[in-house]
Image (cartoon, rainbow, N blue to C red):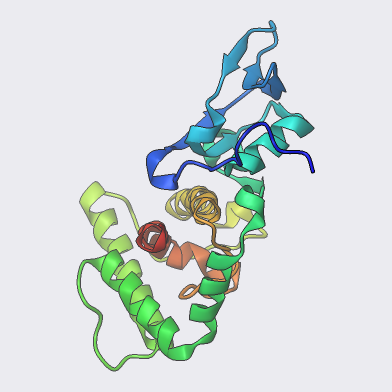
Length: 237
C-alpha cells in the first residue's frame, strides 16, 4: 500500500480566514501549484485560497477546472455574482458538499416550536427588542410588515421624499413611481448580497424561516433579510 508523501489536508477554520475576496476580469487557474488570477496582459496575482472563505466572481471572470477543484478541496466557496454583487447567479459547494448545516436548518424549519424560536430571535435582532409574547409566525410576520411600512413613511419624511404607499408591478417597471422603483432596485441588491452570505455560511436561502416563499412579497419584507447574516454567524463554528 502506497504511503502518502504529505499528510491529509486540514482546512483552516472559517474564523481565521479572510471573509470575502472579489475578482473581476481575469482567469482563475492553478499554475505551478499556486492559485492565481491572470489578467489580459499575462500578469499573475497570487491568491492564498486556503485562507479565504469566499471568492465573489464578477462578470469577466473565467475559472479553470483545476481552480474549482482546489477551491473545493480547501473549503473556499465560489460564488458567481453580478457587478458589485447585485445579482447572484450560482454558487459552488465547499468542503466536499457538507450537509450538516442544511440538515440543521431543515430541522428548524420543519419543527413548529423550533421555527417560532428562530423567528423570535430574528425579530429581536432586527428591531433590537423582544417580540410580543404569544404570537404565531404569521402574526409576527404581520407586525413586521406594519413596522416596515411605517419605516418607509418615517424615512420619506426625514429625507423629504414624496411617499404614497408601497406599490409596484414586477411585470411593468414604469408603472411605479420613483421611490418605489428605487426601493425595488435596492431590494434586488440586498437579496443577492444576502443569498451569497447565506450560501457562504453553509445554508440554503430557499429554506426561509420567516419570509414568505413568494418573491412578490420581498420588496415589502426585504429589511428582515439583514437579520439572516447575524443568524448565520450565530450558528457558525
